[in-house]
Length: 217
Image (cartoon, rainbow, N blue to C red; front, side, top):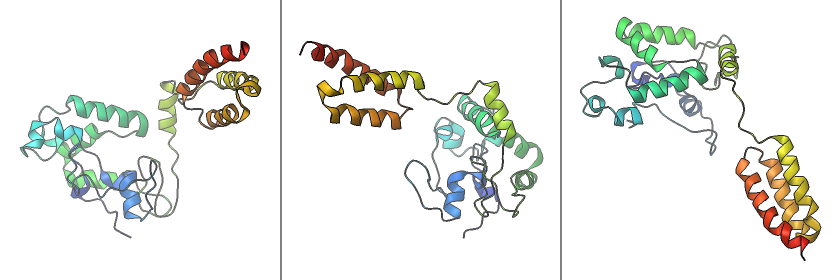
């Protein structure tokens, strides 16, 4: 298993500590990749990642500075956007990381990170994205993240169950005329994919067409 010790090379130009990233921990702990769920990354600097923060910054592109912590006008619009997302979802700030590096130095920053993300069970690293220690399986609860979600009235992106039931019920009504196989298979598909509101709209359009045909058959 590859070491997960925090080093300056693991700190991305934007201030992200790649050592606490889910993709990095999956990579260093040999977790198999899984399309759409598990990806691998050796670290932004290690793979010379040309992210949108770097692409938007002429200083970073031309190697005039090595990180945002060296910039006098930090944060820029791109970094602020990224920082806001991480504050809201993961209670972590690239801007604050960069400010700490600038004010106290890299050594002090790494020490703070090691303490903040230390697993209480085995002493290894807890991932910032899912709160999981990839060494022992410990899961850290994040009450602050849940509090932020409540403050922002966070709602999962799903279709209303009542609307879904309405469309499926209407579809089954026409199944005897239009073909049981087609409509019942579509019903199963929509019930299994409640996060696809476009499916309801598409299905309603079909009802408006085929429903009239069925009535005049």
